[in-house]
Amino acid sequence: MTKKGVRPGFSLMDWNRKRIDCKMTGTVSLDELRRHATSNDAWTVYEGQVYDITPYLDYHPGGVQVLEGSFGGDCTQAFKKTHRWVNGHALLGKCRVGAVEGA
Image 1 (cartoon, rainbow, N blue to C red):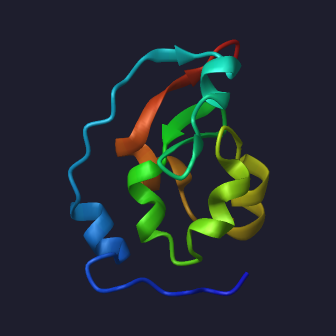
Image 2: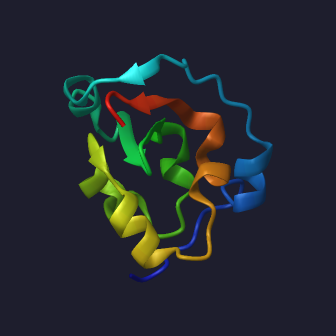
């Protein structure tokens, strides 16, 4: 993966300062997760937790295209392969929607 960099105002520090109001649902079915699979409405699963990563897309240093494969699905393996040292729950916590049903 090649880092594309981010434009001014979209650094990790800017992300950490950003206020987000994601709607918590408690649990999310796989059917519901799959309905959120576009760059305008992108949900993904990380370690059994569902996150609406739509607000994060412009902050990702690798670009949106790198994340597209996880829209409406599970990003856990790809995330851990690329970012072993990053706490994904802390990074995306403000975007948490709920837990995957049955997880």
